[in-house]
Image (cartoon, rainbow, N blue to C red):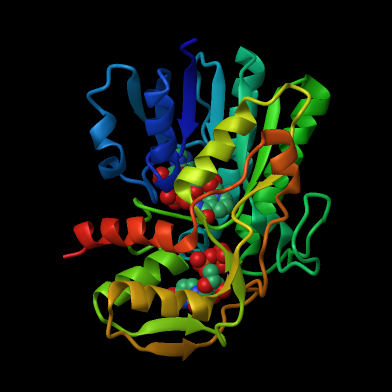
Length: 312
Ligand code: NAD
Ligand code: UDP
């Protein structure tokens, strides 16, 4: 059955892929975005589809529409972008969640929150399971994002308990792929762009901090499956790829795959940069029957191809 679906942050990296997928599945899709980090370029190829609507709007302001489902993705995701205007990041997470939950409550829509592995902060438990409460510095430079997203989770569960809103909370771990912003400062886009330009690759710290990288198609499969779980399943659920790499390994792999002449240069580790991150995905396997299939080399190949096309 055709559903009418609102995607906030629809012109961003994940949002644009999600809009495309939901349209391909025969739904009516509305992208809502203020274009802070997203761009029309990401969705222009969808615009002649009569079932796709594009709205320029900021989630910190109320929004009225009739929809069946809401995917709430609006929020800058890269540390450079979310720290650029920390207060705005908090407003986007918190006011955005309140406005979208209010909308979901009024029209009885199901609503999914794009939460993050950052709710675990610099974790003391490894790998991270959903029942770990995290280790977040509440006043550090990452707190606008981490605490904003934690408050959003709290709002989701309060609307669920108090107002019976049908919620789904997804904790997304580092995800990459085509349409990442070339200057957003995230590690995969940075390393690919520098490698393709044969420029020095900055490694923050000693490069032994780890991340686990999930390719965008795998992640979206988990996201859509989560939205379609029975009402009793709210999450939070981790979705990400459990294969863990050090940042140095990642840099070496990208240099090899691009045949680059780039050299590694070491720079200070930013404050509160998590040392280890790896999802425990047993809950996603059980409840969503989901696991990722695309390995890092395969995903990097597709992402490198994309950046080759857009970098002059
Ligand atoms: P992105 O920056 O590419 O996309 C975010 C989108 O939200 C952009 O199009 C931006 O313009 C829009 N936006 C920002 N503030 C807004 C506001 N106030 N009103 C309306 N639109 C606004 O980032 P992404 O990687 O696509 O991330 C999407 C969501 O997934 C975010 O909520 C992010 O926190 C979450 N997430 C992503 C990752 C990842 O690795 N990509 C990991 C964890 C969580
Ligand atoms: N990083 C790096 N060089 C870069 C960009 C990032 O060494 O050019 C490191 C960063 O310090 C962090 C990891 O790569 O340890 C992942 O950073 P990213 O900003 O992609 O996401 P995070 O998981 O920290 O939110």
